[in-house]
Image (cartoon, rainbow, N blue to C red; front, side):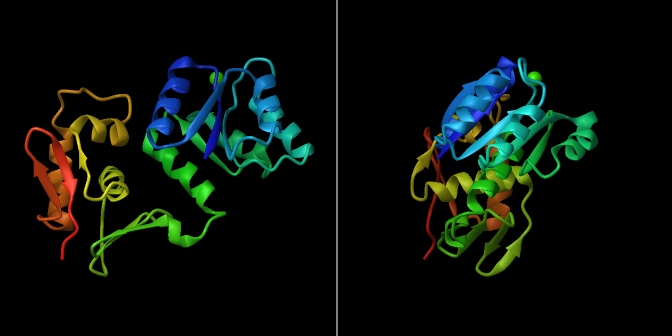
Length: 220
Ligand code: CA
């Protein structure tokens, strides 16, 4: 899946690019409205993340021009939190979703996946492993048919495990997948959340591999 990011603030662009790349997306970044329009029109992208405040041509105009040209690329708009209402009003249905800044990476990732999944079969949005089931669309988790409440972070961690069943994942991998760029590599947050998940999903499901990390095991 190829994603176009139109964002002129280098820190945000890098943050989004890094996170999406780590999640298996091919990412192209542009920093102004003209490029955003030109790249989106090529048809080479499955989705665009579009900042409203862009130099050259602003995001509103880019989106309006694209829709006028019958370009149907799904668009998630990035907007300042205090102008959400203006933004939604100005979009007039041209955008598929919007994301108020500042945002956490997994909030954006969830919206990206939701947009991309809406075209695909429900099958691909449900991850399963030995009685454990995650529905990426409804954000619901089930263990043996019983619904379990997971926080957004717990869900993201469980999702990472379910995408790599039986594979040892290091703390660093889990940190970058679930917590994004803003983490302290010395933090024990992964261990803490693995503990939460074990409590909710079953203690034997996530094995500790000493000196290496954690592994999701399929229970008989
Ligand atoms: Ca901007």
